[in-house]
Image (cartoon, rainbow, N blue to C red; front, top):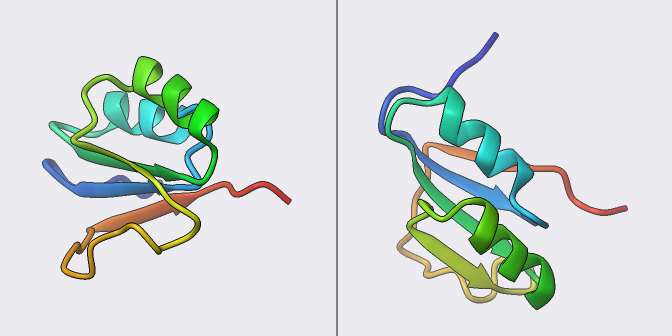
Length: 80
């Protein structure tokens, strides 16, 4: 199984309630989690479910993500 390295900078893209980021928070040593979603209600749920995340972006795709941001891993389970 693949596993992010310790202190990996991880983006949960289309995070919804933050399920993927929450899983990474227990599977990765000292992860730097960042979450992005286009739905404000889902993002509020993610803030409750992943309070240790560094950033929460309300954004339609990449629009609000700073161009200078780089990540070690980008994970997503987008809606269909």
